[in-house]
Length: 321
Image (cartoon, helix red, strand yellow):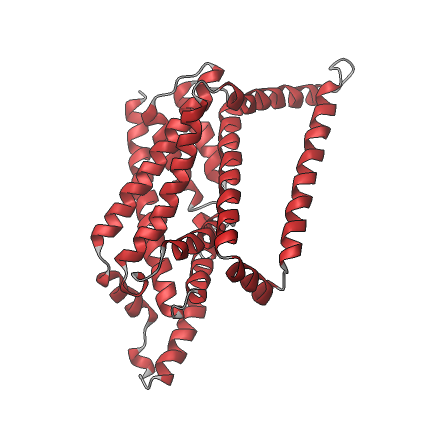
């Protein structure tokens, strides 16, 4: 992504009559960072940590029906550890988060991991809801983008979604059949796997036993409202994006979220590509779009996750002696 943008920036400089020696993408990005309004960046960081607090409180609600009452600081700290780990090894954070809370709160790993899976399932539902809203508000933009860049018509997108739903239902039916089989006469490894799966499914069932379901869904909506605000409010921090509308913020947010979902380290590269693409669609230049992606990414994904991840790495063993 960096090499691509460097080539584009060099071509732009040469077309504008600027010598190649005076055309450094790094210097341009650095100057853009210096130009940002740090009030908005700090506000975005605060909202980011608020979203993490919502996630930690929601996690406590999922663990409570299983007989566990984890400390809020442990939930928050292990969550930040997971985000920190994801920057190095994609998707490792969920396992590290489950292992850390199991260690500090004496919770079976399968149950803690199952509650994380529940959180992810709810997040997918929220994401689908937001994508649906963005499609309704900006249908032409999304359809044109996928048709021009990936040769995927809208009909194929909906068909793919339907196939995914059917596959999920079939998977659930297969699991139900496996659990109906008796343990007698089965290989020990099969019985052990069934036992682990039973613990995992018990964890999944915790969502049906949440005491305050309204609060659970309020936290879930709060997480994603915070995520949206992080993108939209960051527009005000950078000159070329200050004029963009709330709907533009929704489009960039959806594209950026899909970039984070992609299994690269912390969305590195994929996030920059999709946010840049979204802003180009909205009329910004390629370099301004890339600068905005860098500003938001470094503020949240790297600065927030590295700093608070390292703090958690140090503090958690101290408060859990």
